[in-house]
Image 1 (cartoon, rainbow, N blue to C red):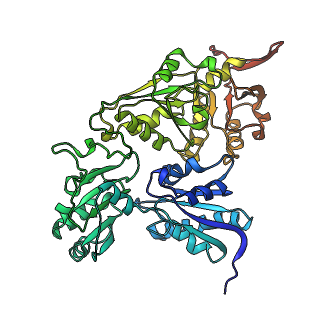
Image 2 (image 1 turned 180 degrees about the vertical axis):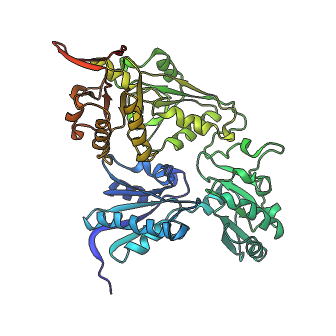
Length: 521
């Protein structure tokens, strides 16, 4: 018999179907107490599970972001798709095993229930024989979809069959004919086959489609009315057993799928409420003096504020104004929340630091608003002073000529792309403002950047290190490129790398840096 390790404990944490308020009390307690929070995502980096858990996490927790190498796309892995996934699970399990062996507790997040069509089970198989493991069950999407539909799935002696939409169409149709009630999971690209199976089994007229159950983006439609091209993976088809005795939520006839209203998860009736608006604002980099009057007016007029907790906390509290704070990694979820609130009539201010269009929330909100379901919700962007200009002003004019802005974060784009852009801009002899240079989880990129730049820039190129500019712990230093110490750089730091025409000199008021607009011919 294998001996169970008494080191760290693995928790399989079921988060429920999407609404953070459907997280169980025990799951919330374990998330807050865990040393390590682990979660999966596709290569785009957005984790629904982490977004659900964010309200219950605490500052300073270690995070393990487990990024699938493939989801539905092809791969050149020698073992094909399955080989790539199996290798990923093995490597991910060893990453978690390292924490468990060191005595750390690990909360591995799972949307819905950890043992119901979940990635958690693959980690459990690889770790539970070596470490203590406990499962915290969660509300499944089947239950959430049934609640959204507002009718029982089964009663009496009726049988509910849960089916994956990936089954062959003829087999799916056979099983639908042989059961009183059904829930069909794993939709997305499989929906045309699912619709065909429903029709062939004679169940299409009695079937309903629920998208993103319990979330702010929830939709309920008749299965026959769904546009095949508009079905996300996080959706489910239900065929209730008992005949419904109450009106079911359904879309108005004659409208396109993307225009159907979401079924509200609050008491607010969206049917009669005029759309509000979303205004994406920039507070400036630190000092309240750098927030523009235009932005202040928008904040005063807003009924709701949406944003990263640290930025929301910079906005004065106003009586009656609702504040929706969240973690800094759930941009898409925040954008959807803001748009949904506006669709229900709220005047929403999405709060960013600096300028909202520079590595901030404006792009996330605009990208989400392109979804047809948000048609008719106005979105405005109000500019703010960005950190690069604030840091530059403290030493003079290092950005006085052509310059580029580059984020070192490889959370949403691969490091290869970052490195390629650094090399291209350095070769073009422009000054560079470096955003997001490091964090607690990213500590090597600054040194890698310095080595790339030294291939094109002289060692004595001026580098401005600005930390918390405009804030209470502001510091600004000027060093040379070869002196740049990565240990001095964190997430609150912005770097400005000079060009060949950048010069610096000392004054009684401190160092002065400028990039000349004149080139010697």
